[in-house]
Image (cartoon, rainbow, N blue to C red; front, side):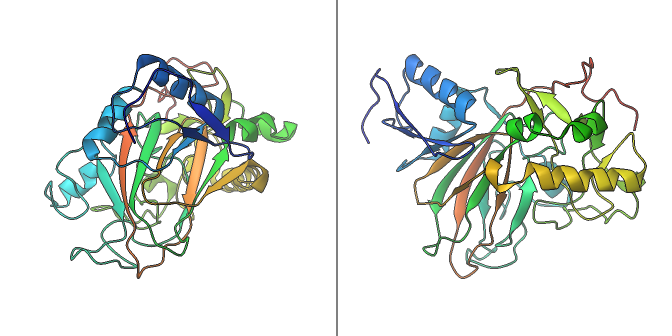
Length: 317
């Protein structure tokens, strides 16, 4: 690709409930202000953006994210540091603003299991919902991709999930909050230095409202974060059994196929998604082939509660 000109971009919607491809831009080159505005508008409209054929360095990815608020370190990084990992070790980059999501082991070979999430399937989740201030968005660039279409990424629209909630579910979650589980990674494996919780009182993490307001669009989105087998994320204001039954219904509703778009990766793809209104998951990866992705998290702002609270963590645990 060459340099960028100040002209309209081509925005091609996926035809699904979310997602669009952005054509006519080289993210390795400086972006004119009007191009940034077009991308921001497309992101607000489509929630997930795809940029194909991008030849990028980590500095390029970081520079692109600067247009949308900068970066924040992944919440898991501190756990790796406390477990004795050193910056520059396998799975822990020197630059806290970038992390590599790969299925490579410490010898650089593809594997089913490594010190991260390996080649496993990853369930529906929102990035870093287990932090006090989750990232607004995620940028994920594909360096190496298996040639068998394994490791697809699926996204689901949580604006629509909230808008189309049955009346009884909307009433049931009104004013409710969740404690978000930080003890396990997205492959449901214990984070470094964490112990398996035995009750909900053992869950470590922040409290967030179950519905949040997007600061750009003003729309309400269901905010479920992540959920593993009990004990895990739970509804603060409800007894465990009632809360588990309610979450069963919410997760089944929020991840319906009609809200989903599936992305099949190619090397050079960059995806940009909005964690304030999108959940995503990954299918299992062929463990005999390398998959190497470069990720940065777009710096977050405090969650805006749909319940009109002054503080996102004002609820007693």
